[in-house]
Length: 80
Image 1 (cartoon, helix red, strand yellow):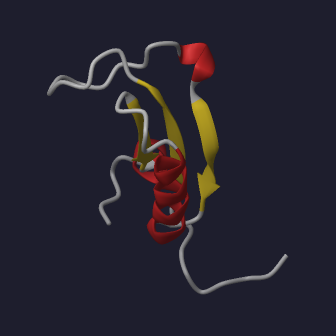
Image 2: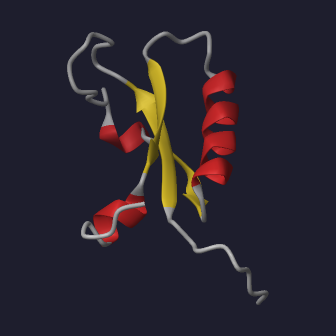
């Protein structure tokens, strides 16, 4: 394992088809079909994965991908 000087800030990328694309909070149509793209050590890597996944599904208006800042959920007292 190699060491890096950059602090790991866990980010998750998930996506799926939404019930409604209105201004409300997103709700997935079928949780069993949620696409877990992956876990990433920083926002930049997660954003690249998000961008790639979103581009693959650009023709489906109900499909959305999200970057989840998991490091904030693991330690909500930290601010970055």
